[in-house]
Length: 270
Image (cartoon, rainbow, N blue to C red; front, top):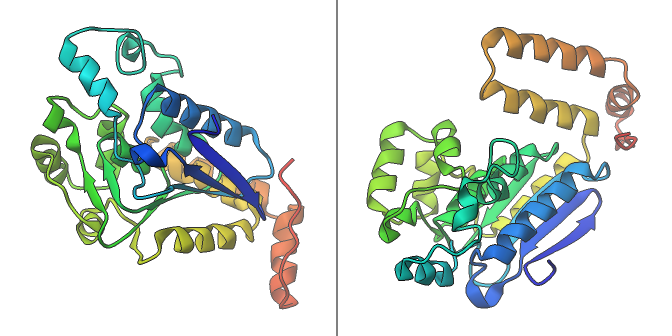
């Protein structure tokens, strides 16, 4: 896995980097597996307080590996993430390619994607799985599947509507038009445009890591629920999470530290 993804930990921040730099971090079967395994591991790590997802080299992720398209052109249907396994629901409601994007939403702490160079097709969908996207001004992004006669199939159809208008999504899906960071911000696909997205993402991640970890995790649970839950369920969940936090050791420490004008010292999540 280490020839596809590298993970380093610093102060509760998991710095996750795609490292297939010779292929602009393109998605082959090994990369899909590495993304899922990395995400599944971070889901269980109680010491993680924030995650930054980025790509080393010239790009965040160039999308599906060209070798997979060559296989498609041959008309053969060999087993693999892009072939026969697509129909298999290996992760609940998702297949392996979809889980490579969805797993970042399932991680119980905030995930920030730092996007530079290109994020085409599957690379674009991978960025959508994060809670936030910090993008370079000159980044090139696209829902590029139509170029290859395909549709977005890495959970992009599920993720895009929570970020952008339906007509914008349709235009980009039907045309495969490439857009830059400023356009991504306008559409809703980018959280911030930064000259140094990785540096800014790590800065924000460390800021989050300095907050009450129980409250951060509760916040992500609530915001995820708000995307699909009915109003009554969401309002009840708000109350339930808040009642659990009030008077808890880390919440008391947050109040005490603020009153004493010092940095808080939070206990880890059990």
